[in-house]
Image 1 (spheres, rainbow, N blue to C red):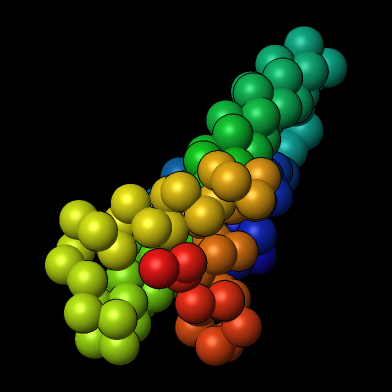
Image 2 (cartoon, rainbow, N blue to C red):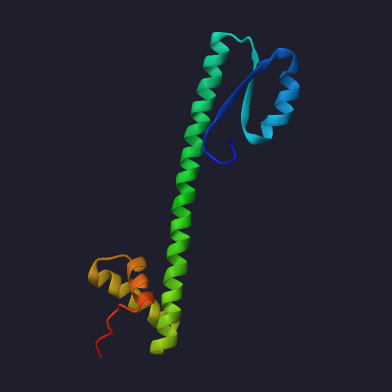
Length: 126
């Protein structure tokens, strides 16, 4: 569960098997506590878990942002190669064309690239 989702898990086990259990689950990010445990210890563990969850949430958000940016770069590069191949532009001119179209039309470079790749982009004015 810990490896596939952003959850934080606390596993409470009998004190006599705590070390053995910890050795088996720590690499998966599972917190372990002995049973029985005191309220202050449990509260501290829950606070650590909340802190860890927040850190995971921020890391997941950064990961998604980076993946989206990489996808945009791949899409724009494919559109540039299309312009290079079909319109005889060099890479710098293809890049400028996509940037200018995006600015002129107030849309993202990603949208311009998608239109180009779908063949929906109008021919540039001569």
